[in-house]
Length: 198
Image (cartoon, rainbow, N blue to C red; front, side, top):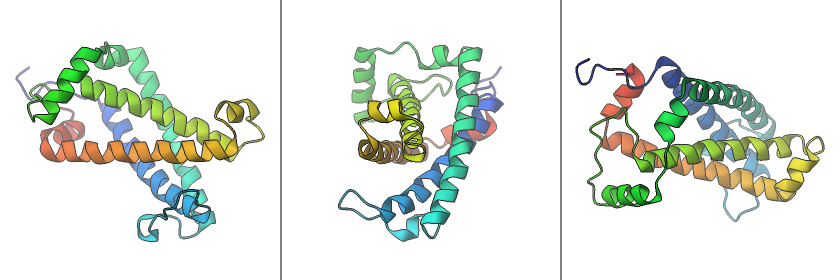
């Protein structure tokens, strides 16, 4: 097909991407309200950017979004694995090519001519997000059902350690989202591809 008309993102990628974005926004904003109820760092999240109104409301939003995130994430992972997209799009990883792409990015010379191809920075970033989301879910299980998951709780260093890991994993995800939005602003046709698929 002509350039710009071939399929870049299948429909299932686009749907799971946008559902994931909604779930993460709800979880982050409700999580900030939950964190403010019992902070463990010397910071407080402004209530204007949190969701839920009070602790009970925030927990309800958080659990609702959790099921959306987990279900959507499992569908995304299964489709990636069974379609071969995971292997094709995200591998192989090369430390040398990664460093070359990082340097090209810092110099503003990283090519985005072919949106169907992920460079090494994108591959590493998206794989990091997948692992980060897995840590969020596992640490969230410890916070939700600590008694029912004693082995997982101990693997994560205990309940209090799991709280910090959960918070830091969400902070890393929010950091990724900010960088992702900056890159979309710099290359707006990537947003069009995620909406139209072409």
